[in-house]
Length: 53
Length: 253
Image: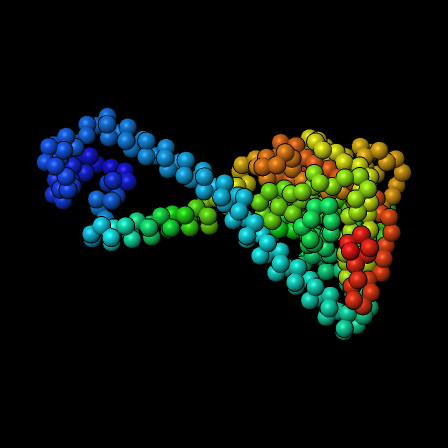
């Protein structure tokens, strides 16, 4: 999978490495900004109140 | 992931290496599936690791930033109100009603806002309960329970060190013109999350039977999970007027 992505990136090794880095950062950004904030309330790690539910 | 394009491309670009290796490098379908599966597992592991980083570090960064901003706003409002009228201004519950100081937790002041929804608490503040049992604000002067919740980990982790709070420790709540000094008299290290009675106006589980002015801090326990709730109760000891320099009461000095 990652090998396939690597082979389909344009340019020489350095350009590919740079694009890979940008892709990784983009994925991390999407995870931190959208995916994790969405997933967090669904997971039972941070409920601090007592309630009836 | 089409295996055909994959191999085609590989032949065109040609990975540098010895020629016999190129012949061997035509993975069968099963080998390909196994390798993709393995990479997916590695990816899942990395994502979970990142989630831990997010929960325990990034949410704190965001929450502390937000709490500082909102706390500054409250302090600014107080300063302005004081110079403008000096009278007892209307309680502005939207921005925050005051600051909680618990010296035993060693984390400075915690802004207190209305409500305990995660939207409120995720800003790195403590919230007073409006549901299931409505908190009685100390500013009302009535008997009742000033019940609060805040995060144990992540999102500012304002009650992280709640286990350091012991009987006899002070809890001070600061408003625009009063210091409310409470003294801890009971700690419940573990209870069910359904135990809403701990928020009652007279919290019987703490051993008190008579009406009084109580404060209740709740958060989750053990750390990093939400299996149980940790509860600390205090009782109002005295109220001090805030002077011109906002000199803190002796418990905070």
